[in-house]
Amino acid sequence: MKPYISSGIIDARPAPDAVRGKLMTRSRALGLAFLIAWGAFFIGIAWFLYTSYDADYMARYTPKYLTGFWTTLELVFWSLVLGGILSLPIAFGRMSSNRLLHGLSFGYIYFFRGTPLLAQLFLLYYGFGQFRSFWQDVNLWWLFRDSWSIALLSFTLNTAAYQAEILRGAIMNVPRGQVEGAMSLGLPKFVTFFKVILPQALIVALRPYGNEVILMVKGSAVVSIISVYDLMGETRRAFSQTYDFQVYIYAAIFYLVFVEIMRRIWDIVEHRLTRHLRRDNV
Image 1 (spheres, one colour):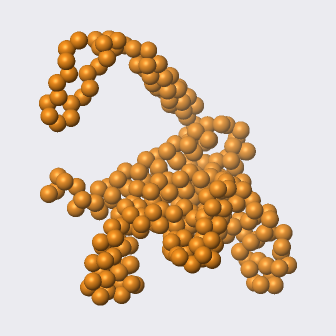
Image 2 (cartoon, helix red, strand yellow):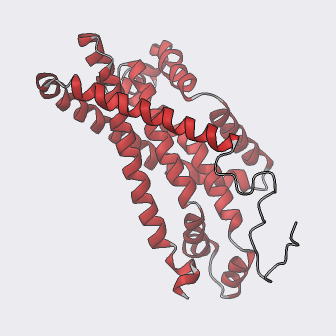
Image 3 (spheres, helix red, strand yellow):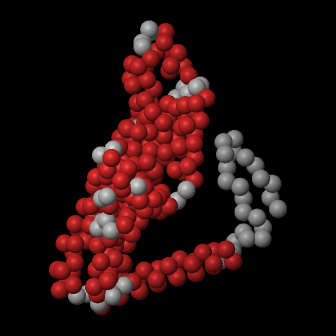
């Protein structure tokens, strides 16, 4: 065996003698077989959709798919916006030295991150809905009698917990020197946070926020269970009328295309906002 001599930088380790020169190993064969199986699966789905294409079916249900998809976008958008606003005080409480505020924020985050979104949705829809007389007395029955409002409330509370942890981690990642520099200039704490700390923290949190958006889009399918006719709700209604399982294939394609578009857009935004951090621009 020839001695391994480093070039002074970082060289790739030489392949072991057991696999050197082999074009096909067991792991490569398994990986190739797995790839072929997935390729055959997707080709089969594409062939099935092609051979079973029905123009009348598409003309009838495509507008409903689009309407349901728009409902999904509205639900996710407003949930993320309201959850982002709610996440600010929760993140502050999580970082607070006050034991009461810290404990309340920790308990909120622990509950909503530790329990399934579906269970939270049912708790609000079926559990809180049983106290109709109380909500009517406090003029909040309008919130708990409507499926859309319950879905929005459930999603907002859930994503607020995740966004609070994302924001807290991003704020703690901002170098202490930035805060000390702002204090040396005599900037008020309010200005320091919103002009110095928060912009840098949001750059750090870009990728986690993007993941949260994608997870919210995919998780929004659960609201169809409480009769919200989002994309999955319209899909279930179409299936109940046709008993054709390809409606779920089309729904999966809708979700897949939208998630991929969102991922690409988020990559562009992140690339644009972090261009000053890359070495190729130096």
